[in-house]
Image (tube, rainbow, N blue to C red; front, side):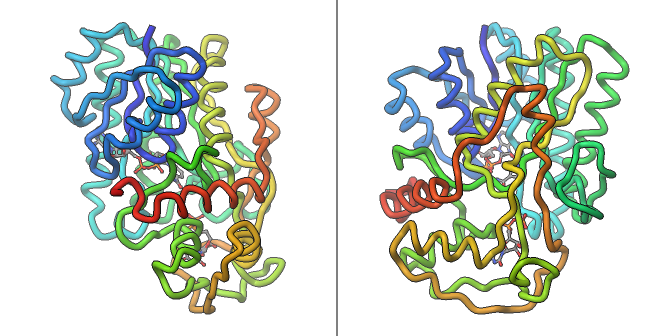
Length: 337
Ligand code: NAD
Ligand code: UDP
């Protein structure tokens, strides 16, 4: 039996493919390389000494999906493929809805056509909007403030409707908090295009000297030091959450959402300090205005995933920072060199 992994050449996908291969699963990856290259999976093959079939193509291409489901004995899908930049989503919302919503509908239609009902979806903590309290539980109200977040919420709603319409479906909605870090080998990691939007890759590029200083978006939030607090989770822990969710689907009924986080929040300045320590490099920063749409504080109550999936994040902040730095310093140009 084969797991189809869409977007498997990307940041979280490549780490998950590695863990799947190490768990002796057959893996088929479909990726259009719009935000990745085949180099990540070449390195995954080297690290695991295992093979993975990689198809260059798009989830919006129904004929291609039908061919893949005909040619391979796919029995489950982990769906990472999509666009993920919040700012960009406000500029080109149609592209986001087309890739993330329509692309997913296309995939679900072909799954149904081939009687494949096990589906693990990359959702995001962004669906909790601006929570009234923390830690955040799965049953908190859902909302979205930008097209990216709305595309995730729409797919969640589609999945809930689908599972309600047909009891064959077994769907895990994995709401990631803030994935950071890299595989401990330093061979695979996050390779953002252009100027990074996210905090950790930006800090790493300042530490290596590619960028002058970090702009800290606001120091007047109601948090420990006034800067934003997030629940950062090591990408390998996150990858393992997918294996646990996939294994649990056999016992699961319908559509269930899980928060994948550590349950602990760190401020931007705490992240800067921790990175300086791990890299032994200074990370100069300046305080600037708040970023529109940002919230003060966001961290998970991770107890549901622990209870139901027997999954818990095991890597601490020090390890996240060390692994980020190893990846950044060994690959200053990402996969390009
Ligand atoms: P990524 O951009 O590294 O990976 C996404 C992959 O999907 C890329 O390899 C890209 O080439 C591919 N892709 C995009 N559109 C495609 C299409 N139409 N057909 C085929 N392939 C396509 O991103 P990531 O950080 O690994 O995120 C994976 C998923 O997790 C995304 O759905 C993202 O929205 C979600 N997510 C990410 C984060 C985060 O902070 N990284 C947080 C929450 C949720
Ligand atoms: N942040 C920052 N400077 C940056 C990028 C991010 O100060 O260049 C802050 C941001 O305001 C938030 C935290 O770092 O408080 C995490 O931001 P990121 O974009 O990585 O994740 P998200 O906001 O989606 O949780």
